[in-house]
Length: 279
Image (cartoon, rainbow, N blue to C red; front, side, top):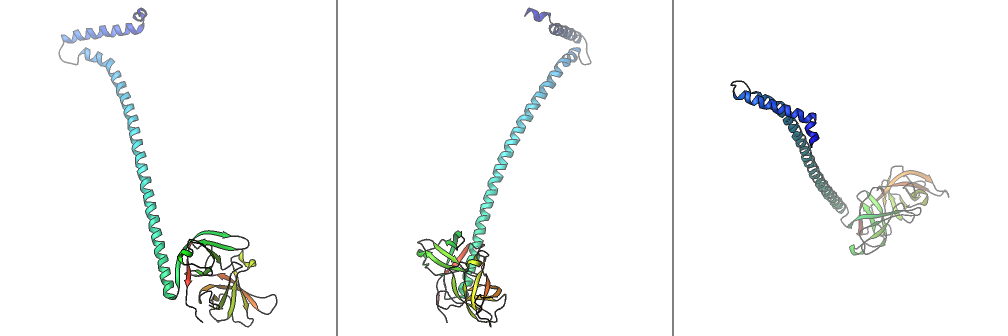
């Protein structure tokens, strides 16, 4: 402690005190201008005040930044919640639009085919292998679906039911080798057989067999079900003719068909549970 009284700091403070006292007494007998005491005091106090103001401002800026940051975080969370809610509303709206579109399709199909009893179904699984092309729908025997029921969309034939469960069914597509249906050329009314082919399945095509050599069939002709045999209803579009080629035995021709339905893009189908058999 004694060493402090010998330091330059102590001497400086003592000198400042003496000067301040002298200024005070001088001011006591002097009138008019700013006192020497005020000047001297200001000389020491002002820097301290400035420093104090600077520190206060610094902390004000820090707290202000934290407040604004928290406000931005809260606003961002609110915006995220609103965005998620909007997305959910859009999904609901789109589902409603899709459902309305399916009902319109079903209504149009019923108007065109008043004898058909339809069941709408959704594809829930796809199983495409080297030897077959099948998918699973979410309706089964509880909905009145049976084996060999024809499966369609508004564009045409998708395939037929090959197996049923209580709440699901397996559907074989038109390009599957096990598929076979009596067919007719819409334009010429020539009769033939539409069937799947191992050779064409991988490319997404099927075959129209037993086409007479003198048939007037042409590329682009539409092929539909003939209704012969009563398994599938008459007049369901199967596909269009891509090419016409001679059979190996030379007795008849065959045509390569492109399916009427894009089998890679369907999600909903209609199962024809019953229909009136026509000649």
